[in-house]
Amino acid sequence: METLIQVSYLVASILFIVAIKLLNSPRTARLGNALGALGMALGMIATLFHKGILRYEWIVLGVGVGSVLGAWMALKVKMTAMPQMVALLNGFGGAASALVALAEAERSQALTEYFASPSFSPTTLAIIALSVLIGTVTFSGSLIAFGKLEEILSGRPFLLPAHHYQSLGWLILSLIMTVLYAGIQESYWLYGVLGASLLLGFWITLPVGGADMPVIVAFLNSLSGLAAAATGFVLQNYLLIIAGTLVGASGLILTQIMSRAMNRSLWNVLFAGVGSSTSTASAGDRTVRATTPEDVALMLNYAREVVIVPGYGMAVAQAQHAVKKLMDALLARNVEVRFAIHPVAGRMPGHMNVLLAEADIPYERLYEMEKINPDFPQVDVALVIGANDVVNPAARKDTSSPLYGMPILEVDKARSVIVLKRSMNPGFAGVENELFYQPQTYMLFGDARASLEKITEALKEL
Image (cartoon, rainbow, N blue to C red):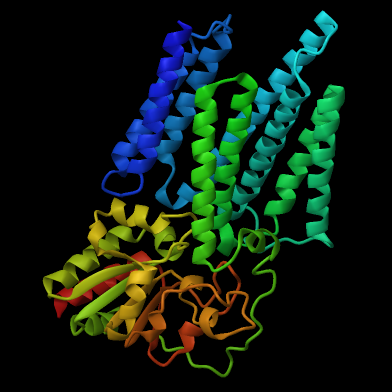
């Protein structure tokens, strides 16, 4: 039976690796997701035959409750709330690893008292404490990320006096108690690690601004994998080690990609507090040119090429299907339509890709920032739908802006720019957008979906 379990773990590990590879392309992502789920199911079933399991009542209850909650979330959570769901699931993963490590610690303590000799080596005890530390930081940090994404908490960075020094203090305290627990094997040191790491997760996530949420979600995803891998070493479970390492490594790579897309380091994201102060430039002496759906339709009708730039405002308005209808209407008039995708548009990596795929917009029409930026000077109309910070020219021109140096979609170089937005409020970074005041920019205020539907109807009447 043990051999069969290990073979099942090997097959599940291969399925995980193949799944991650398939997730690299939208064409194969659905199959990759299915293979990953199959691998997880195989791993769970094989574990149920482990000789260490004596009773199944709580396991059956846990599987039942978890399955119902998972199915409900998958069916009911809107695509606009997917970043919040990802953040929450990261937190659950970290919490699960920490709880398993705590259970092993209690088992170790009981065995030590029964046999009057240490049952675990100091190295194993240190790994238990590290699993608790990383898992708890992931859990508490993910709760803050969820709160900001759900707008229960403000998206602005929250900084206490000497905030980052306090974070460093919680980290050092957690590590000291980890060493003490490994050396003394007294449970109160481990629960001290639990408390300090819980606060550490809060402290390192509170200063992260809303504009940096894609980066922090990827980072927390990586931490959840590292916590699982550490727990795998404690349990000597090879599948958990492999799966956790895959998640940890891929999460770190994704974090690096997201940070590079913003031209910032992870350290800068965690400790710079971008958005804690807003741009002080006054808009009183600058002109905003408002427009109507009929005027926008007229501009689009005479365009040869239109580039659509989706942002989080499109997700909030659930406007992706309206975008598809507008694209079809333009293509029927032989107008070339492309989509410009910024790596951190929305609130999680790939957010815009997922929404556009939901509306059956061909992947071939989606262009990454590096590929489409050189083409903007030849674009007749750039249609910006709810994007803000990722199209702000201040990132390229204003050295005093907290966005300075962040690569952006250079829509300001297009011949005409139409911005669909509810109001003139700044984006997640809290920085005023210079694009809105440029002479070729026109603002169409209102709900993005309603505005797009009106534009499409007006276009059909021309």
